[in-house]
Image (cartoon, rainbow over all chains, first blue to last red; front, side, top):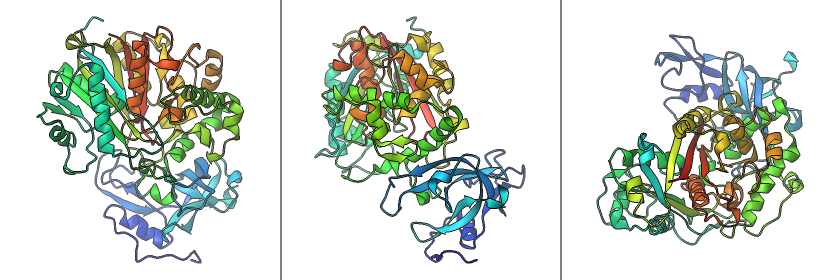
Length: 139
Length: 388
């Protein structure tokens, strides 16, 4: 993948979410799916929020979704972030959602229900993040 | 009151708020202690009367163990019968203390907290900068979490920006006339001023958003029976309740899940009080941003979803309006002090019911509503207060 540079080695190792970030580092988006009830959920939890089963696994996501909501931040919380940037809550088509950025277009072009697809970008700490960009194919 | 319900057997007998400023040259411990002592003094009580504490322990000294309230026992120089660190502020803190007193676990509880010496001049308060790995990496903060909710509301209902801005202006003007407010003397503000202020997180402009300041607040709660022998007119807890949707700053709050957050708690609280939201004389609402004020009127059922800004424009929110609100200038203009901000809502509600609220006093206020909320739009709580 011809993506941005990244620093895989220094990514903090986390017990519950390490696999998610390892996939991100490979340019893949995954999400937890419950083995018992099939529920998609996010953020990862040790037990399924629908049936409380601890039998779940990360499965690949299509990375396609729609903007549930978005806001353009003009004042970042810390200097590592460069404003303006678009925060969004994206509904991914398998039935889960995540906080993310919308990239690849001007902030004023982002709208609720806009189709988007995952695009990996380098975050403020040098690691890849699963952002989303307008999905031209879905328009 | 019949006195049948346990909550109706307690009263708020002392309140206090310290000086408020963007930065104070003291510590969180010292400013919190001053608030606690001032509230006890207000109640005509002393530390020797206290047998219940709900507070966080900010150090220095003591330990990092929970409950931090036990560290306060050391400072107070006496053992306690009841402590509660769970949410030692605002409505949940008052309800926990009231429940403990009603159950006989303690008799005089002081709930207190605040912050000082922690706010950098340019920094955003650390409690607005979540550390969860799925939030922090995106550069989110409190204003953005709430903005994600407000944007859906705006998309669906297209509220009038002027009417929304007028709410922020009115609250800020209440703060302008409050000599204790951080923003005292600033303004007056018009809706146009709010709409001309810099955009922070769409749709919120700078003047739509609350302060992050320093100071402390405290309240003293005891039995209604003991309250009769104390100097202040007691304030009764007529009803209260909380809704915890989920932890804040983990998943983004979603409009469809959180816009009516608190409706169940409010319904239970008003049933307990045998009152309706229409009976409230003064509202001390958690005004972390302008949309949250509108949301709470819709959540309370005083108007339909999507109609809050228009409803408030017609009803009036000043001291002579149908729904006087945030009479001290609120979190927007009076102060917001970390682990103590929600308590300021009860302090002002109590002063309104005593008739000692100062320039923001609502004539003959008998019923007050105080609310609180999570900084990530994921929980809400309400308390109805009345003259005891």
